[in-house]
Image (cartoon, rainbow, N blue to C red; front, side, top):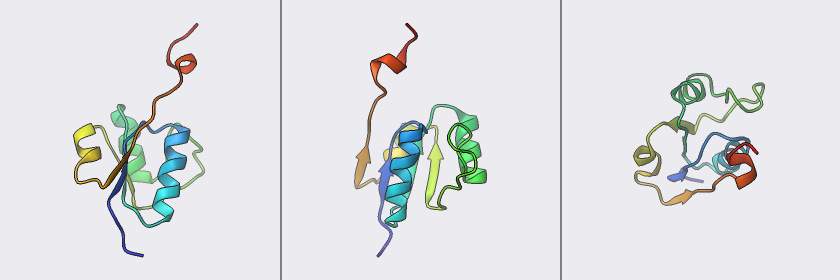
Length: 91
């Protein structure tokens, strides 16, 4: 199967990593959006997520960026979701 340009534009949450991994296993190039530059650097340099399952190695076709524009550039599909309100704010 040829690699295609499917981008996962989301935070690097557990759900985001799971969705990115599923798409990457199907030979898609994945771009994850994260606000935290440290998270992006760790994902790109070590192929691991510093916030999700550290012993799990991400596939090489998963990359991360702090730029929403870069995350969705030239994408054939963008997967976006938001966290539930009970996770968004304390109380």
